Length: 265
Image (tube, rainbow, N blue to C red; front, top):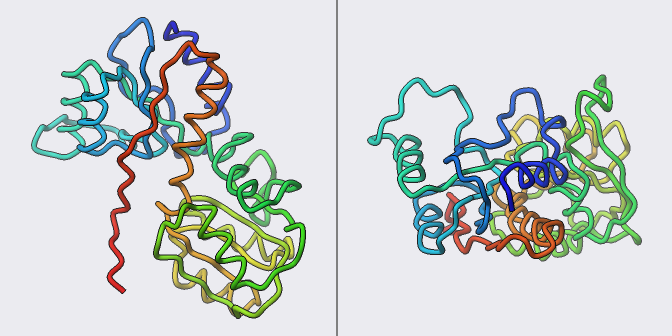
């Protein structure tokens, strides 16, 4: 597939126009290949992912987390980011990041999590005082049947592929039905969940005071981790690329899924 056609395909899946203002999605390393043939889909760039891309002879890596986020003043092989950039360029591998644009997109991370939870009817969840145009990441919807929080946690753990380290604030015996989610670090959206009457809010990297305020307000909070809530990106993005390219691309799911945390208890 021609690079120009592939870039349009990516924009159809996750339009760059809907990324957050602070984000840096899009083509991050452009090696100059006219064609995109073999794509590796990974959560983020690590040394192991680069080795995997080289071994599997891919010329493009699609990631969720941007490799380049802040402006770079110097590329230094002695720094992790610099080493990654140099290794990628030496091996002719380009990198594309679909970050908050995929979180917000139809069938992106948040839509996918709602679907995995069995929630088919849902809508966008905004922060109080912010409109549709300002924030489109989170979702809110209703489970087909109410269930105890303890049962919901089992369902969530299964939906996320048993990521480990799920934390919860709330009575396990409480019946819940209205669910709000924001994959990744979306703790601030607990305010929107409260305003919308949610019973439980699921995200990652929820701050202590956000959880404490939610608890005192009667909202159950589940912190399934940044990695835990976004690891679903790989299968979802790969599936969409395969379907929409109609066989024109070879799409490979990365086997490197590394949570930076280990859980010892």
